[in-house]
Image (cartoon, rainbow, N blue to C red; front, top):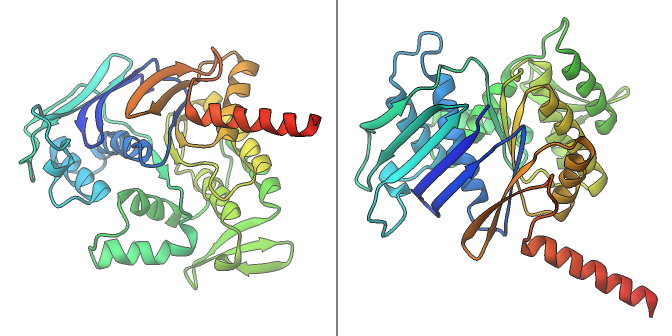
Length: 337
């Protein structure tokens, strides 16, 4: 499990020190504060460790990382990711229970990271990034754009997900927890999402009816993606799942159900990093932390500063929380007039 993240001069993230990470970890803050950027930063390193020495892969960890950073952030050169005006180099360190992955480089870096030190064993699992925007209706477009056209537009988080979804659902016995989660997801969906290989298109099947994926609600498609990745065995114990804005396109009840499922998968060994600006997400995770008496570390952004807290200890001090409470008090006051 990833236990600590330390970043220096990484784009908008000038100084991040987040330790004591657990099975579920939450990043909150207003739009534009760097939540998604932080998820992508961690994801790039995780995927580098998973691709390194896998199968017939001959590239060094440095070569894999350079390509991952380039296609994930889609800057003209990876040196552009160094914080503007920073005197010191960009630095990233991940700690996996005492085994570290660390690299740093300057603003002129283009194709080679010479200062990289890795003590983390090659990971056999697959991790994935679930973006705020749905992917199923764009599945073939993403693959063509990147695999054939080699064009900027859809970054590596989209390409990795599109490729993972391309794998067919597998029959046979799945992990018990995964099988139960899939049943719960099917109840949430009130149907199933299926990929038709003959036409290379996704459909939503409800009873005996089939609907084109473009006519299906975004919330259904978002939940279906998680179901598909569990069904085709892409995800396994010790995978890491990054979810950007889990609240996107979901009503509060569905958010609560989805986070209950996140809690089950986290108990089974999958580690989650969630980025959100939703009071519903924070409140639901707070309740999960209280019910299970478990740690849910939170990294909170306010006025360009980042603070750490733990939902097991209470709700964090953050403008998102403050505004939600203010509106609630105003509603109560109006009701009592």
